[in-house]
Image (cartoon, rainbow, N blue to C red; front, side):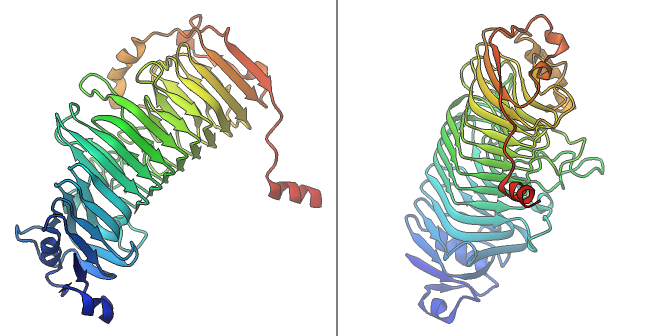
Length: 461
C-alpha cells in the first residue's frame, strides 16, 4: 500500500503519507503511484492538481497497472481538478478499482479492460457548478465514464456503483466500440445507484448552430457493440440532452445482439427538454431500448416518449409496472413489437399519445389517466414517418421499418382509462384495414385521486 497526500491535505495526512504532492508535479507523482501492479493507492483528502506537470510519457494520462485499487477519502474530499486541459484516468489493465474520489473540470475516466470497478466516484465537467466546459476543444470526451470495446473482443465484468456525473460535456456513462460499429461487445455489466444529471452540454454544434450535433444521453449503454447480462438498477437520469437511458439497436452495418438486459427501478426525468427543435437526432425520451426487461421504472416530463421501445427480437421486450407522467408519449412500441409484453403500465398526463404501437401477438396492459392531448390517446399501426423519434438523416431507415408489414394481429391490449372509450383509439391511415382490434378491451376507471395537498385545500374551502 502507498499513501499519497495533496499539497493542501491536513498536516496529519501529510505526516503519514509516503508521497506528498507539491502542486507542480502532481501528475507525475500520481502516475508513478498507480504504476505498480496489485497495489492499493490511498489518496488522502485534499485537492490534486491534474494539470500540474506530466507523466513520464509527456502526457496527463493516469494509467493504473493490473490489480491496482485507487481509494480516496470520499468524492467530495479527495478531489482531482483539471482546470485547463484534459486529464484521463485511462484503465488498460484488468482488475482495476477506483473508489471514493471526485474529478472536477477536464477529468474523465475511460476503461478498456476486464474486471473494472468504479464505486462512489463523482465527476463534473464543470468548475463552478453551473457552466459546462468545452471538453471537446480540450482533447475530446465521449463520456465522463467511458468504456471502449474493440472489434472481436468482449469486455467483461464491469461494475459502476454509486457513481454520479453532473453536467457532463457529452454522455454521462457510455459503452461503445472504438473504430467499429459491430463485432465486439460487453458482458456482465452492473450499474447500481448511479446518477447522470444534466448530461450533454449543447456545445456540439455545426455551421454555427449550437447543439445540433449533440445527442448526449445519461446512460448510452451501449451505443455500438453487443451486450449480454447487463443490469441497471436504481439509477437516475435527469435533464439529459437526449435520452436518459439509451440502448442503440440493430440494423444493417450496426448489428447489436442484446441478451439478458434488465432495467430495474430506474428513473428518467425531463430528458430532451433542453435540446432544440432541429438536433441531429430526435430521441429525447426517458428510455430508448430494445430487447430488454424493464421493471418498476419511471419517467416524467420527457420531451418525446417516456418509454420508446423498438422491439429488436420477437419476445425480447418486457415492461412490468412502469409508469410515465407528463411526457409527450407515454409508451411507444415500434419496429414491429412482436410478442412484446407490457404489464401494469401507467401513462398519466401524456400530451401527444398515451400509447402508440405496432406489433403482433403482443400482450399489453396499460392504464391511461388524465390524458392531456388533443388527439385520441391510443394510436395503433405503422406511421408514415417517425417524426416523433427519428432524425431527418434516418429517412432511409423507413424501408426496413415498412418491410416488417403494416398489419397488427393476435394482440391482446387491455386498457383501463378515465377517458371516453368512444374517443380512445385511432388507427393510423397507412394501417387502415390491417389492424385487428379483436383483442382490444377497454375498462372504464375513475379519475386518479387528487394529491393530498389539493384534497386538503378543497376540504378547507
